[in-house]
Image 1 (cartoon, one colour):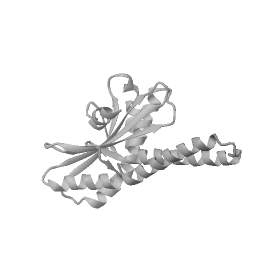
Image 2: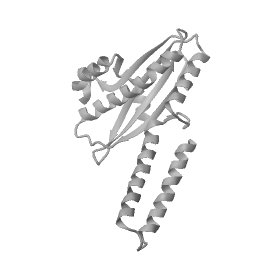
Image 3: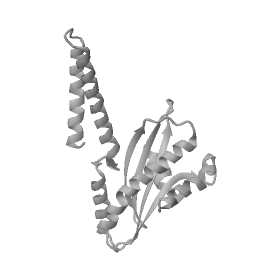
Image 4: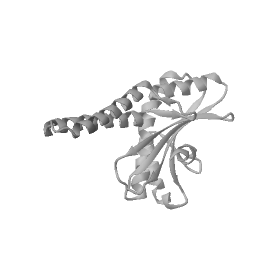
Length: 212
């Protein structure tokens, strides 16, 4: 676990304990209690932000976006004779509350010789009333990650090794998502990315799905 995340968690635990003690004190004013509650909310939001913005490797190592990019570049440059495919996909699981657990994965595939992946979880506060709403959210989470890393990858990778970049979406020609197929493909292509659907969209339907 990164030191900054650990320190925030420790501060949050200590602050929560202090708040409980102060609430039993008759000298605590209403104004002070409100200020302390605001501080507590800010700390919770900070912890949530750190969780949302950090990725995990398959071995559980926490990495920020720049570190993920460096890992991908190092992996590719170690064997430049191979071709590579970098893919991003998101999957989700609906919870009883109507909220959903989202996982976005970045996969670098050394074609014919394995690969690596990185993932992060995002508990979105929105409630999702339809499958379509959830699928569209998955797509935009993938696009947000794609926009963040593609330009940096292009700046660091030369013409060798050869590589391509795709968005994998968790929809297919069969099943309940078939009615959304053209809409989802249109969204991805409108953002100038190539899209793959099930059963080829392994970054979403296999890798991300493993962690929801």
